[in-house]
Image: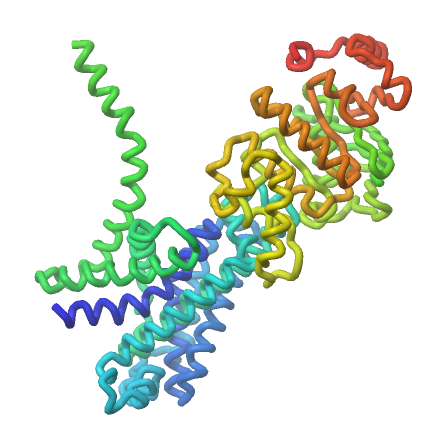
Length: 303
Length: 261
């Protein structure tokens, strides 16, 4: 059971960066960024290539850079070319598949068994200390903590407030001195930088990266986000951001337990879809329930 | 302060839905002037405001604000020097953000990466206290919890926290109950007087139109058909205003809300 929890924590921490990215784009900016899958893979691909070339530290920055670039393109399509935001994400996502294959040099995967990654580097530093077995958790934990701190500070700057207002009341922003095209662009760049970093870290943690590594990540992250906002949905930005990490952990924990109970691994995506559907549908169905009940009782009275 | 010269706007030109919303309209406002605007439905009052704010570009003419030509300036850049309140109290503030966050965004002191300081908070607190609605003790609460009147008062504060060159009030008390409307009007008068802001206010209440500010404009068919101020305005009654309107347009005022209030 302890190993299940440990694996859940390792994966949860690394995936939580994508959840935090959606926290910015989906919860704050109110844009459902469907380029997340491709961007996640892009970060993993670029991170892997740079790490294999011998620059593990630089690989993180590179992954964030290309992630931000991908977000910039998505934003450009919706703010300057009048393309619907969902469609913009899908288009970028499709295009990124080719980009990712090109980054990987035409082969669908990269092996990093002998590569120095941030994980192996930290493992080396921690050798002979009691913390040695937990190097994955430590790297993921530091990354998640840094992203939470950066995101919290960022969302409380004037720019961050402007981004939140863009998602919260577009009418207000349109008639205020904030340029919504600018705030949307900045928001998507920052969010996708985190998504890219998330992909990069997952690839390096697993010591291999496949071009399908990002498939379905947006739904998995959305499921974690919705779990997180149920657990810690109220309060300040910092608390809600911590909730995102908690949500990612809970999602992985439930999934890990289900695997232990002999659920086949390929069920992951169906499970995440069902969680998202339930989390989005229950509040709606709840609001409809009084009407349904009224109809049922009215029918009974008529009889 | 505001110089509108010969602006025109036709919507859907060349189609069956063609609508001349503004016709060769010229208006000059001196600094500190507070003018009220009345007119029938579809007279072009809100269209005039939209033209000033830059929701669309005018077909002809020019608009100057504080000496600068803003005819082709994009909406969000004009918004730096123009404050605007709408009839819908939900429109001017972000419900999911707290009162102080909304004010910080509106105050916009410092650069993009500046944080709210204790000094900012103290300033917001003082200004909220002037509204006399107890909002100064609820600064950490989301704006979505406020009533319509409180939200409109907050929006007014947000629009004037950095005094704009021009304040546009588009029937901003029409959706509020009479008591709250009275309170928001009182606050409006105080804020405008305190900062000596040049103001245009659309209203459907004839008494208000004569009482508030120092000039009354009446619009019909995209034109200003009546413009009174000074001694002439001081001696005017609502009946005078109505007969002057008939004389100016050859028609009676056909706004139910005006006639009923």
